[in-house]
Structure formats: C-alpha cells, structure tokens
Amino acid sequence: MRDAELPYTHDVAPGDERHASVRLRVLGYVVGLALAVLLTATSFFIAGTNLVWQPSIPIAVIVLAIAQMGVHLVFFLHITTGPDNTNNVMALAFGLLIVLLVISGSLWIMANLNQNMMPMDQIVQMQR
Amino acid sequence: MSIAVAHDDPTHLGVLAKVVHEGPASKRVVTGYGFWIFLLSDIVMFSCFFAAYAVLSGQTAGGPTGAQLFNLKSVAIETACLLLSSFTCGMASIAAEERNRFWFQVAMGVTCIFGLAFLWIEFHEFADLVARGAGPSRSAFLSAFFTLVGCHGGHVSAGILWLLTMMAQVLAKGFRADILRRLLCFALFWHALDIIWVAVFSVVYLLGSAA
Image (cartoon, rainbow over all chains, first blue to last red):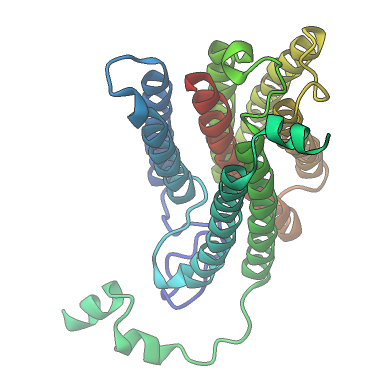
C-alpha cells in the first residue's frame, strides 16, 4: 500500500512497505535476491569444501541459513523494526520463541535419553 | 525546520500527540496480520517436523544415509527455482499495487513456472529414492525426511493452486480491494515457503551430505 503520506503511527500490514516509487521497491527486491543468492552460494560452497576446519562446517551452514532467513524477512516480507511494524515483530518474536523451545528442547531431551540408554546387546541379555 | 525534523522522527512525541483517536485498523492491516499469525503457526508446525528429523537423522536401520542418497546439484537447481520465484512474486506485488494487469499476469506466470519446475525436480527425486528401495518405510531417517520435505512440497503445490486462482480472479474481477488483500496473503505465503526451504536445504541436504 502506498501510504507514505500517513504518519508513522498507523500500523502496516506484514508484506506492505512505505516506499512510494516503483524503482525503489524493485531495487529492494533486487538487493534481497542478490544477498540471498550470495548466502546460498556460500552455504553450498562451505558444505562441500576442504578449505575450512571440518567440525566448523555445520555451525557455518546454520549461521548462513539464519542470516538468509533474516534477509528474506526484511527484503521480501518487509518486516522492519519501525514503530508501524511493532505488532508484526511481536508476533514473529513469539513464533521464534516457540520454534526455539520445540527444536532445542527435543534435541536436548532425546540426546539425554540416548546417553542414558543401555546398549542394545545388554538389553537383549537381560531379557533372557 | 523543527517541524520537518518532527515529521522525520517517528518516535517524536509531537507527532504521536497529533494522532490519538484513529479508530480500528484498516481491513488490509487486520487481514494481513491475521494471515501473518497463521504463517507463524505453520512455521511452528514445520519446526516440529524439523525437530523430528534432527532427532531421527542418524537412525538409518542399516539402510542408506543422507550422504549416499542426496544429489546436491538438483537441490541447488531447486533452490534457484524457489529464490527466483520469490523475486518474481515480489514483482507481481508491485505490479498489483500499480494496477498494471499485463505485468502482473507476466510476473505471476513466471512465478508459476518456477514453482512447477521445483515440484517437477522434487517429484523425480522422490520417485528415484523409492525406486532405489529408499522409500519412507525403509528407516526412521527416511520417514522423517519424506514427511518434512513432502510437507514443504505439499505447501508449494497448494501455493501454485492459489497462484492460478489469483491470476484468474484478477482477470475476471480486476484489482478490487478484496482481491488485493488476497494477493497480499498469497505473497506472504509464497515468501514464507521460501524461508522454510532455506532451512530444508541447509539442515536436511547440506548437513546431511556433510555428515
């Protein structure tokens, strides 16, 4: 929606942006696409290379993925930190909280159970 | 001079004091916000599938591992398809705001072609895996893999049906306010699918091939 003339206290729907000119909006998508391609290419390169210390690769891939999600949120979904976007950001923050709880909680609990489980051959022996 | 500064500064108290009783938010804001909440709940659902995949990714039951199965070249092409379709979807949003029917239909058509190309490659990958005896019933790892990636593919299929519906609605009814609200929701949905694909190719394919 082109509501650049409205004061900033009006809320903006997620996905809408305030820039008035077509050229600026197209430029925003082009910059977003360029950043996303750069991050994706780096990700694919890092995953298959021997140039870096091998145990660092999973962390590098995950960090690049999180960075790219940020790029998509800002340049494609137009989620900003402006006061007109507060509601959208608060909903996103709550969603992220649940996502982090589900993923880290599952990994933590299942790794803990795995560690405390008796090896399979011993369980088989006990059942005799 | 000071008035201009006040308008440039969104948190300035002078600006805030001017707009007090504005009434309820516009329908576009309410619709977009409600759909945003739905998308976040969809992402929470995907996070459960991601958690299941992360827990089960090592449980191959003596079967093939991800490193033996995945073909990173086709994953790279799939990623390119989705990225470009997200970009052309943005172009369609701009065309809709400019009320330009021609460029809207062109951008949506290109988006549709990229989406279909993505689905085509993914379908062939799945068919190839099943033909090699690595179907969803082979191991817990493959069950989690097919559930997660298949769920994303299902979303893309639904998105393409929605996309074609929007093309037809704009053709038949033009850029009415309610059609524009649906377009806003569709664009949000399509961009969100791209975000989920970023997580899929990183966690499933890249980490799976590295390990």
